[in-house]
Length: 296
Length: 296
Image (cartoon, rainbow over all chains, first blue to last red):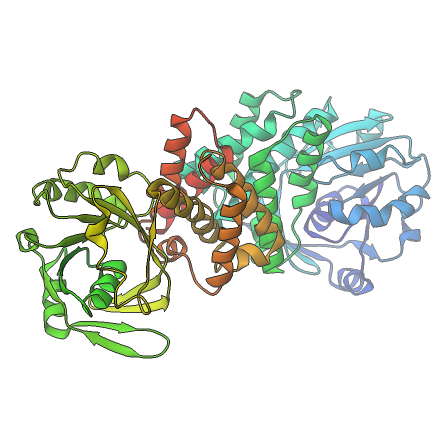
C-alpha cells in the first residue's frame, strides 16, 4: 500500500518508520533540508532496547503526494490551517487520516472533498532529537475512528505490525477524541505548571486534588463521556507514563509554542457553545498562555 | 516606652531596629543562640544606602517580657498557636500588637485576657540574611487598628520615627486585614506558581487575566471591601514591588513552609462560613500545598 505522511515532527517520523516495514511510505517535510538528510541517512529510531535505521523517501513538495492509497496528516493542529488549501486539491478518492490533538480540526474536515476521512489519537511517547532521529520513549496505541466514508479502506493497518505498532479501531470518533481531549486537558497543563513528571499528579495528594477538580470541570461539558471511566483512564495514563514529561511541559521547558489552544482552547470553545463557564479551566488556560509568553 | 517584641524573624528584627531608636526594646527569640549573637553583635540592618548596627537586648525566656508598655507579636501565624498559653499569663493591662498575615488569628484574640489589643499589617519588604542581619528591601507602612480596648495607648508610635518607619492608624481593623488578605491571596500564590517577580503579574497580560479572575473570586466573599478599590491597590502593589520576589515564592524556592494556610486557607474558611464555593481559589490553594510538599 502506498502511504503518504505529512509532517516531519516526532509523530510523523514515528509513523514513517513503523509503517515503512509493510508499506511504501513517502514522507512530506516542511523543509528541503530535512527531506535531504532523511533521504541520505534514513530515519534513526531508538528505544530502550536498540537503534534501528529505516529507509524512508522524503520530499518537501506537495505534488509528490498524489496517488497515495492513504495520506496521514501528522502536523500539529496549529499548523493544519495552512495545509487545508493543499489538501483540498488531493484526489477525492484518497482516504485521509488526521492525527491531531483536540477537536478543533473537526469543523475543517467537513469542508474537505475526500470521501473517506479517519481521525486518530496517538498514545505513543516519542521525542524528536534530530531532524532524522526520534526516541520512542513509550510504546502506545494509535486509536482510529471513521469520521466519514468507508471503514474498509483502512483494513490494511492492523495486519502484520500489530505487535510493534498497534492500532485500535473505535466505533465512535467523538467519544475517542473527547476522551483524549479530556486527558490532555488535565495532564498536559498541570504538569507544565507544576514542572513535574506525569506520575507526580497522582503521587502528590494535593496535585491529585487539583487533577480531580480540573477533570470534573472539563468532563462536565462532555456528557457523552462517562466521567468515572475517564478519570480512571487518566489515572492509568499518569501511572503508565509516570517517568515522562508531557509534551506541554517539554514545550514550555524548551521555549516552544504549546498546543494549549488545540487542547484547553478547544474545551473552552466547546463549553461556550454549551453555555457553560469553566472558571478553573479558564484560569489554567491563561496560566499556560502566560508561561508560554515568558518562555518563548 | 518599654517595648517587647516576640519573634526573631525578618519582621521582628526590623521592628526591633527602628523602634530601638526611640524606645527601650527587648526582643524575644526562640533560640538562645540567636539571642546571644544579637546581644553580642547587635542587629545589622542594610538597605540600598547603608549598613547600620542597632544595639538591642535579646532573650529567649518568656519571663523577661513582664512589665512592658507594649508587646508586639511578630511570629508567623502558624507559630502563634504555640505562643497562646504564654500570652495568656501576661498582665491584663499590657497592650498587645499582633502583626500576622491572614485573619485566622482574630478568633484567638477573643480569648486573651489583655484589655487593649491592636492588629497590624506590614508592608515593608525585608529579608533575614543571618540570625542578626536583615536587608530592608522596600520601605513600606505599618498599618495599625484597634481590635479592642483603648486607642490612646498607642499614641507613642507615630512620633519621631514617622519619616523612617511610618505607621498609619485605621479605624476599621476588619477592613484593614481583609484588604491585606485579598492582596496576599492573589499576589503571593500566583508569583509562587509562575515563579515570577511581582511586576510580571501585571506586565504579562495572561497572568494579569489570572490575577483579575482570582481577585474577583476572593473579593466576592468580602462584601465589606470595595472590589474596584482593592484591585487598584493590588495593581499598585505589583507596580511598586515589581522587582521583588513575594514571600511565598521565596519560601517555595528555599524549600520553606509557606503561609498558604494563613492566607488562602483563611479565605476558603471564610468562604465556607458564608456558604460560597471558590473553585479557582481552591485549586490555587491545593497547587501551593502540592508545591510546598515537592520543595520541602
